[in-house]
Length: 402
Image 1 (spheres, rainbow, N blue to C red):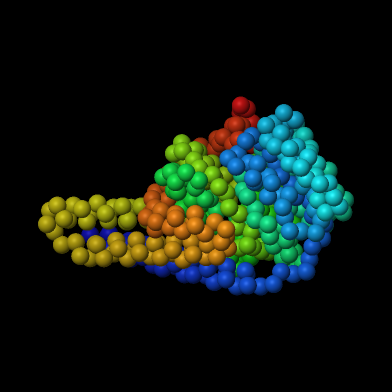
Image 2: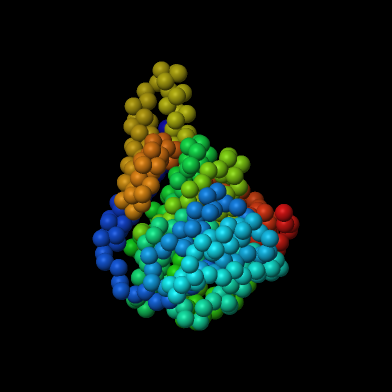
């Protein structure tokens, strides 16, 4: 029991630090959204890699045409001309008036051979952009940007000392299934790791803006060759150049979707496998931290149940267990409240999911532990119908295509 008390105290201390991080995240969100946007609206190229039919894809794509921004182009890129997503793109393009404000194009990049398909698509697309564009913006088609997204994402680049500006995703379950809510809570912990520390922030490939000049000077297109992760590679290039990454809370992008348990494990395992290959300094703390938490939290629950059955004193164990739980639940509450303030349009859906954030957060640590262990045993991932073997951060081998 002494060993349990000792490690429980460590977990509580880590929980206090985590709660402080949640408070900093909420304060950062409040400060950022209250600031007026910089008057910086250069011509922009928005790159949207397309493959397959995501849930709500038509609405997601339509959101790209509805941005409150003076002038920009949307570059849709896919590996093949008959990809079903492009039929929706063409339908939207026909309805959209081709004006000086918004221009569109479709690029067929062909199948990848020496990198991930998304990375290959982007490498081809960035070479065929509008010469007027001063900023490159990257977006994923499984997210649904709000109307102010593009303006908010580009504005921080008015400061030329900033390397890139990034948002992140926030899953909003559409069917209320347990797996979907668990994925939301699992992903939420990553979102709240972003904030004022620009040197520690990272780029998310589904919502990132970078000056064209910076992109060229860092040779990002060349560095993408042989990789699967566009965002980890871009983040590394910016960190090596000591260029800060500005997190834009207003660009926390809703992803309205649902998933099965199989899809949940496939998604989360893939994320940790990619993290292990491209950022092992992040994977190791996840493995160690989640292992320690699970041993103490779930082990503590077993000790308490055993104590009740055997009529032993459980007051100390129950107190430590309760403190650990309440610290995590409080952070989840603070984080969700901050996100509701960013996405008021989805306030009802977000509030409806509050109970899952308060209840499921300990189980996401167990899921993280499983993901980290799976990542230790395998580097093979399946992503949008393509199976890859991640040999290293600069070498990805395509194993199979659906």
